[in-house]
Image (cartoon, rainbow, N blue to C red; front, side, top):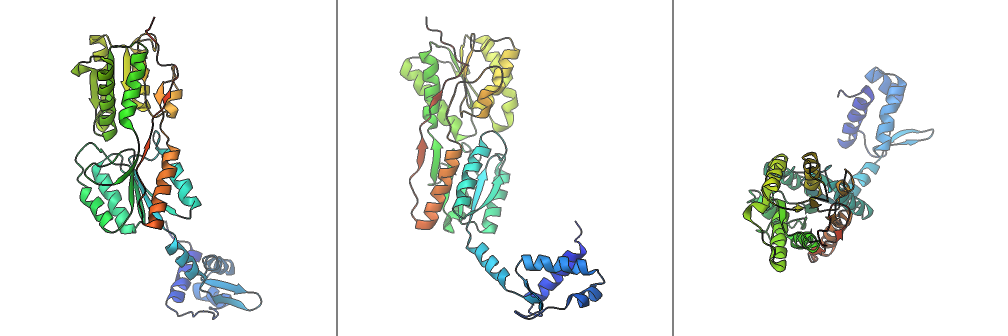
Length: 360
């Protein structure tokens, strides 16, 4: 966008102040002379001066004129003193992430910290770009949600470089197992276990487990599913665990419907509410009655669990609390130099309408 005339005048006066052509506490060129010099109206000159007064480069003294001020230096120093926390999440405006970011942002703001926000879209190349941005900016701390945490990450060297620079770091929702980094997570093994246990307790013996496999959470939730089946003596076949990747979520419905037709599964455990909501719509469209014929459990207690034809039974995720405690963790570490312990949240079952009992 082309600069306005008054902004151009303001920029030129600012350059002369920085170069000390206009010296501290001395008057600048009078307004009438500036009008003639730039061939503009008095109003345009006054707009330019008003910008520089607001920014602290000039001060107006009634009946005397306009003088060079150094209030801008105090503003600049204040900004330098304000520490900036980098926040990298997989997504910004999707699913549970706005609530997590809101918790981070509110806490940082209350403590006088600024926020530098970036998103990877669960892509390693975009994660690399985000990390390089944080390095270039010189953030004072970093809150990261790992990208495809169950795969090899080509950006591990960048994380090491950040740590070598003494930048405190905490990871949320998952962690890169190759790095010794503090984390704030839900106990995902218990998520899988509790969801499976609840269906078994409601009499379901044939279960279908759907999980995302490029993120560590999916691996741990699958571990919980297997442990619960073993603990309760429930058998499952290899086909009863259906996996998908970030880029193949749209294909999962067809696989689930195929397995439901080929098996006698009455209980469906989903990686999260997002996939549970998607599958709920697809199975209902295909003629299944939920929960009468098929019970479904999601995870994360997101807003998606309470919309649609059937309200989803799910498991809790602290969301905004996680964001708040991640911000508090990073602030404490910056201020004291002593990292706090990991935080692990206990999942809680949230019972709604999508599970029916088969017990007599």
